[in-house]
Image (cartoon, rainbow, N blue to C red; front, side):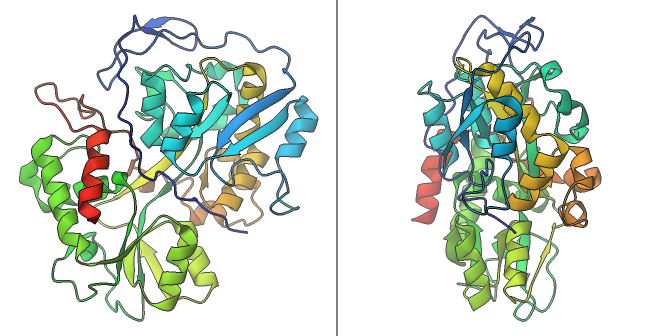
Length: 402
């Protein structure tokens, strides 16, 4: 059964708190310096050894990430975990990345399944600790393409365990859009014949989709990373999206609404996820999807441990469990994503699941620019200019939608 991304990465209103500190520590407890984003990581030690479980673990998670059979009695990887470890799972489902950041600041939670538009905020503010990957045996089988990335590490130090990944794709109704589009230009064309029936993702992070298109459409802007935009580049992306606003019939964040919009024909062209396309096809909507020639934005979620976790041993046990082959296969199928563990592909009920979601195709994912929190220090390495941080992305998104 397919599930949902439940308004993933909806508007986040807080910029990264770039807290200055004395340096951080890697998974072995070694001091580190300034992060690749230009901020200094707080000095927080990683867990050095795994002890007995504390009896419970408090999680902040996306819907579908910690299923205990209450939504579907056949979908349950929580109770087997509790039986195997003695750690009772208490889950708070969050609807947005901003909510996750807020919840983690309360100190009431041990771990969080953070997306890339939240993870750097959590690292910079000192709310999460480095992760000692040696204490997570199943980490060894995680796809190399997910390890030590800008959204889950700083200076080669892991700050979490990858959960899964997916791309933001272009979807269209084949009975309305007769020529299969191969470019994001199809959703940005001011003279589009599909005016009023184009759909776009409802989040400030969608500004990166416009920036990605401009990387090739307007090379003179010099955009190298859609999450590292100086003021001129940012203004160009915002201008493009304001033009697109006249084409958009509906912005979506609820997957069920997009399925129904494509089914009814209210939407015929726009951004989507593979799981939504699968659901739409299951409901007999004539749709197809593609990864356009410019590539795409995408998401990769990471399990991160609270800096002041009250149940750190159970948190580590949970991370190892959720990335184990069987559990990772279960959550990937239920949620609709590519699993993080390479061995999970042999455990999926649908033997074509990993092919559908391109789990083993690193060439495919090399074209995906995963959500990363925009900060003032340009993530593309530029030192001579400041980039626009996420608080300004959020402000701009309000003006774009009008």
